[in-house]
Each structure stands twice: as structure tokens, then as C-alpha cells.
Image: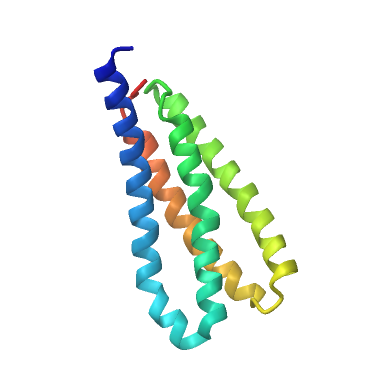
Amino acid sequence: MSIAETSRSQHGRLASAVWLTGVVLATWAVLALPIWLGQGRWGLFGLTAAAVLCWVPGVGVLLALQCLPQPTELSAIAALVSGGVRMLFVAIGLVVGQRWFPELDFWRFSVWLAVFYTVTLATETTLLVRRRPLC
């Protein structure tokens, strides 16, 4: 791989991660004020934790799977893998969050996790399906 191809590959990987980050931040920004006003600091903490729990595996999967060739079958498999990785990460985060932070309302935290899970999975799937192989 030439230096130009390597640079293009790294730029493409970072562009996908930046897109996902932007979508997560925008979603968080839209929800933060109503959550703060309605639920206070623990609501905002839960919203932020949910965003991070869904963003981390999303970026990891995007960076790891960006090199796959374009065929539709592999894109579908990549989308399934990304959903599974995120589900495991989020499930562990939900259990740990409830154990370490009992102040978090379980049902509200679950709702924020569901919101961010859906938003990040949809964004990530779109990025994976529409991408060009970069490696």
C-alpha cells in the first residue's frame, strides 16, 4: 500500500468515526436540556453514560470493519457484528451502572440507552453499507 493509499485509508476511517461522534453529540445536545430540567444531574449523568456506552463500541467497530470489501453480504454481516458488539457492551454497562450508581433510575437509564443504541446503530449501519473499502 502506497503512502497516499494509507493516508486515504486513515482519513476514511476517521471520517466515519467523526460522523458517528457528531451524531451522538447532536443527539445528546438535543436531549440534555430537557433531561436536566426534568431529572436533574442524575438524569444528565445517565444520558451521558448512555451516549458513551453506545459511542465507544460504535467507533471501535467502524474502525475495525472499514477494511472489509464492499459486497452486500459482508456489509450485512458487519452490521450484525456491530449490533452484537454494541448489545454486549451496553448490557454490561447497564448492569455495572445499576450496581455502582444506584441513584440512576433504571427505567430512565434504559430508555436513554435504547435511544442512543438505536441512533448509533442506524448511523453505523448506514456508514458501513455506504462505504467504499479503504484498505
